[in-house]
Image 1: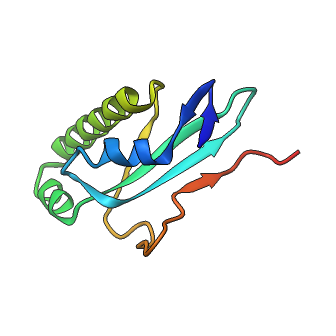
Image 2: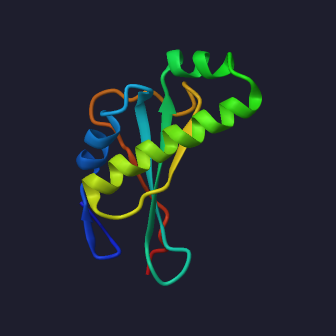
Length: 113
């Protein structure tokens, strides 16, 4: 469990929320940082191969719109699941290492005291 801005965040809740979107693949990464006084969390999620292929067939301006819309939908799903705003960055398929067994999905970049 992570505590971010006073909210208890379970990685399993993030995974469940991301799984509601068919356009997202199985790999994702949760980043926790402290750029100022408060901790921040973000999620990097891979597109499925099908979604990436479909987007590649679009005009460049349509790709940007489609990616923004999908990221917005993912952020809305996460907001409902964890009760805070979580920015989502969409990645191409194969960007993150494939996970086997218990995945290490959380990268804690906060400074150690």
